[in-house]
Structures are given as structure tokens and as C-alpha cells.
Length: 225
Image (cartoon, rainbow, N blue to C red; front, side):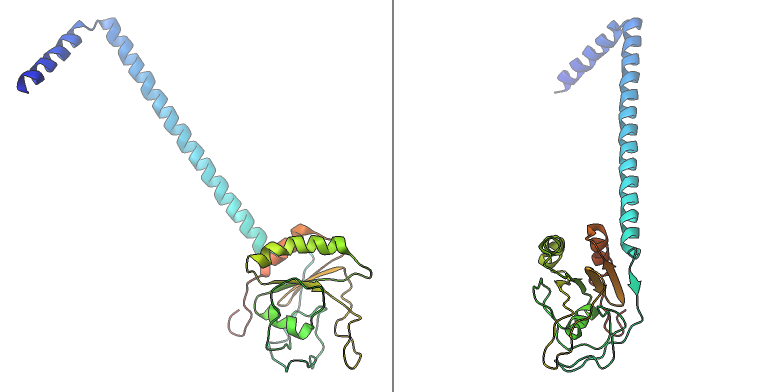
């Protein structure tokens, strides 16, 4: 092993001795060019990584600001409290918004789902208290296109376990004493969250999606908001 090492060292020395000034200069120039290419590649990689990071941070803040901001056109109402009433009773005081956004409600929730038939306001208000968003539609005549659009929008939320309900608002819906259980909401579409209402005359996917993302999942039981 010692003899082999000595032979290799001698061979390298002989090779270095055979290198001419011109070839040495060419070699050093090639080495400098290679080092410059490596530095350039590293710089491009660093610049590209920094640009991607800046873009991601900017996107995060943009999406966060959109979600945190209220939706254009929404209205905010004073809370009417979280008191329970017996199932089947009417709210003892009129709701301050139509559809209601807080106030007296039943102790049980409606399932997070899509409904073809109306549900009493007094039950749905409890869903709002539990961080739900209730989407109503009201049509003088059948509006299958609107219902399909709303269904397509809310289905991913419901399938994903989010607290969203879609159903019709029916001002002509009565039981027992003949008094209507729903009120005319003055728009084709109304989205409700706790103390928040957004009304639309036409389907607007961006606004509806923004409202749902902004308010779904926020618990409004006393002491939790």
C-alpha cells in the first residue's frame, strides 16, 4: 500500500510538471467560469425561492383580508339574545330582521342539509347560534335554475361537515292558527349568520361564498364570542 501511494504522488507531480503556462491559464479560466456559473445558479435559485415566498405570503394576506372583511351589502343587527323557548312556540318578541339572525329559539337544531320544505325560524336561529349559515331562497314561481345554483355552491360545504343549511323561505306557510311562520324577506336570496344578513336579488357566487367562509363555524353561545 505504501508503494502505491508513493507511485500515485509521483505521477501527479510529473503531470503538474508537464502542464504548460498556457494550459494552466486555460485551466484556471475554466475553473473561474465554472465557479461563476455555480454562483449564478445559486443566486437564481435564491431569487426564485424568495419570489415564491413573497408571492405565497402576499396570497395568504390577501385571502385572509378578504375573509376577515365583511361582505358588501350585508347588514348587522343588534343581538336579541340566546333564550330558549318550548318547541312549537312562536318567538314571544318579533325578530328584528327577516329572516331572523338572533333571538328566541328552540333547544334542538335542524340537521345541516338541503331542504325542499320550510323550517320554522325558531329552530333555525339555534343553528345560527351554533355557528351556522342559513341560506334562504324565495321565489314567487318555481325557480329550479336558482335552486340548482345554490345547491351546487353549498353542497361542498355540507359534504365537508360545515354548518350550512339551504331551504326555501315561504311567506305563505301556515299551520294551526293560520298565522304565517315565515315573513316576506324582500329578496330572492338571503344569507343569515348570527346578527348578520345578506340579501341578493340575483345569484352571486363570490358574495355567497365569501359570506359563508366569513361566518361559518363561529360559536355564539354566551361567553364564547
